[in-house]
Amino acid sequence: MRRLTFAALLALVPVASALAADPQAIATRLLDQLDAGQYAAAEAMFSPGMKAAVPADKLKAVWESLPAQAGPRGERGPAKVSQAEGGAGSVVIPLQYAKARLQAQVAVNAEGQVVGFLVQPAAADPAPAPAADAPFSEQAFEVPGNDGRPGLPGTLALPRGKRPFPAVVLVHGSGPQDRDETIGPTRPFLDIARGLAAQGIAVLRYDKRTHARPQDFTASFGIAEETVDDAVAAVAALAAIDGIDPKRVFVLGHSQGGLLAGHIAKASAGKVAGLVLFAAPARPLLDLLAEQNRYFVNLDGSVSAEEQAHLDALDAAIAAVRRDPQASLLNTPGRFWQELEQVDAVADVRASGLPALLLQGGRDFQVVDADWQRWKQELSGDRYRFHHYPALNHLGIAGQGKGSLEEYAQPGHVDAALIGDIASWIRSR
Image (tube, rainbow, N blue to C red; front, side):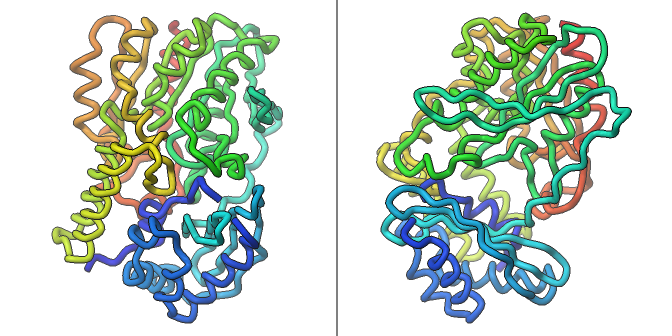
């Protein structure tokens, strides 16, 4: 069987949106059982959905692969707990290995079941402030909430020089994401924000609500609560800032953010001047999820019985959430998946009447050539511009060979040519 890495665990077992009763004690007990090799006992702590997705043998394969990749295990760091009402919660525990700093995230529901388990590279140290002589500055900025929800913390990168400036709101991909869209040692949104600001374009990036307020996602939710409402609020807030040209506010959506960019533009009621779609799906996200998992298990050219069982279970879970809004997949409710299924990203962009710039990496295994070809075939005319970068992955970072999850654990920066193409296109609007 192909050995799973800690990066693979990131994809196969994302953090749950549902969070739980003394979560720190439960998370600590789970890690104690894993360290002791008591995988059946660890599995017994899981919710039914987690047991189906990550049975004891898969848990064993992943956990025991960590020392082989990261060196001998060291001490754990202090836990950080986000507590929700009713005892639900999410726990982050640093894991020190000889060659790597990792972290375990454990989500627990109100019944005390583990509903999400993620091991990934530890959060990177805070990014250094821009140089004193940088052609832009950064300042704290809060994206307003709505319907009584709190605002979201963010950062506004503001160029120096003659105002007003064109401006961009960055909209994240799937899952809980911070304002820099941090993945291991990489920060794609930080690179894009500072790269554009250095070329005279203001950029607003903010922590996604599922990252900043995971305790708010203990019940069913849809695309509005998860992404769209906050992006619309960010557009309006950015347009109102002194020094920003309110007629030149753009939306840059990455991955799922690109899928929803046309939807966000419509909900923004004329406040968006154009769209940048970076690695944007053009087909249903559930179809892409199934494709990605098949790609992972086929990387070594063979599929074991255990891996096939995982694929079959995933197919059944996808079919269930397509039928039932009360079902759950990857600890995300069926309602969310069904709303995503109803989004036709290509039709939304076309109906918006807005100019659009589309960007795609040739080594992207998450959003693939089938999506790129649909965009190109169905969007024609002077309103649309397309740029393809053969060496880039899903994060816009250059590499070689077939794309892999392990690549996401390597340091890298978004390609300067891609950022330059965005800047040139925006300045031409």
